[in-house]
Image 1 (tube, rainbow, N blue to C red):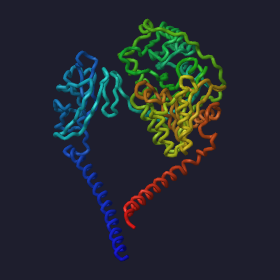
Image 2 (tube, rainbow, N blue to C red; image 1 turned 135 degrees about the horizontal axis):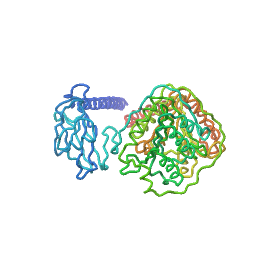
Image 3 (cartoon, helix red, strand yellow; image 1 turned 45 degrees about the vertical axis):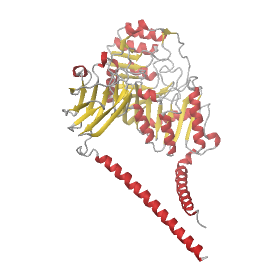
Image 4 (cartoon, rainbow, N blue to C red; image 1 turned 180 degrees about the vertical axis):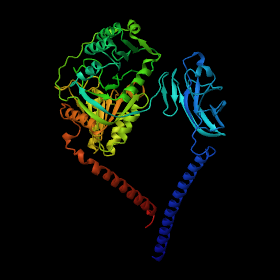
Length: 563
């Protein structure tokens, strides 16, 4: 008996010893990993502190015979002794005033495209793709790998997005506080018309489609008053151009108003999809097209805002100037000869005014544009939400980045509601969103989605907007999908303040409560209002339990050989 006890004690001691060794080994591995990370950082230690030279832009496939004019842009950050290699040749990167330099085998050609110093270099880039490495004294500081370079486009080495020739990406622009008139459609279609009628100096109207006889009347009247007017539209909208649009654009053009289409190739944008107008020193931004179903108030639920803001008008005038002077812009008088037109019946619905337009103050207006910043800015607002997010959108991809961002918000305990259209072309995808939201809601996540059917207040959902934390409202043309945020021209106004958030929230709640579609939570009795308080606690307790069970299992395994 004593021998068995001695053997057991010895074995138990060995077990504890093995457990101690295991812990020591884990600590050693952690130290080695940490040391490796330190060594990796030390590899660039020859660069002065806080200096970060990087590859900025790559243009491998210019629109020129034999790719003449291909170039690379490097921000040296003032660091000398930099070289650039593709694994076959090595280029010395010079330090220039301003610190950012373009390297090109055809510097005169490249100078036509950039406003930074250009230096001669033996740049030869593959259209099929390759890896470029920026070194400092033989130590790697940055690398970029690309493949299948589209003709004429440049690679943004930060976002790894291909940017079409002639597109200059814009940053989010804050235009300060202002008074705005918030309105919705089909309730108040007079707001855009009245604004046009008040113009004294300029009207810059940008859109996707244009089929509005009342708007044409207002524009012609403004032109007679000496107002300078330009109209810029998409040249190839889905479904083509209608004969009704041809009639209205002919009326404008034949009376001396400048009408242009983005119809040239290669196109800078997949679609010119914004809906805005700069009117003297104010600007209207909305979700609706310039046609009876949209601004005419004959069908769609839309959101709009008239910003009485000189700075906002100036920013959008700059966007308009950029877009209306590109190589793919064609005068209507020329474009109309090459276009086939379709007969389309205009919307004729009649709807009551449930929500009047309201003049209010906003603390800040931020102008978002795509491509460039709108998609990222919207998702950033979702990621930083603290209480609730209400979204209205014609459609949503259940496998797309915006829906994933909303789900992640719900996982943080944020209340999420999503209102979708019942239009026949959106039905299948929107049902998938509703079903997925329903599944997630059943697991305890506070996310709900529903499809709104046509009713007495409007025909279909066409608004693209959101209210976040009862403090921020998003109004504009951006559909919540990756294509719109990266390929289309879109314009959104972010309105920061209690008043605009309250206004659009009232509209959202009325549309949410008045639906005839499918709710994903309330019919199952899920109390989503209390979920944020207990869901994180349950997750934390579950994680703690998992750690305890794992520890017990490990200890049991070690002792399993002993009597």
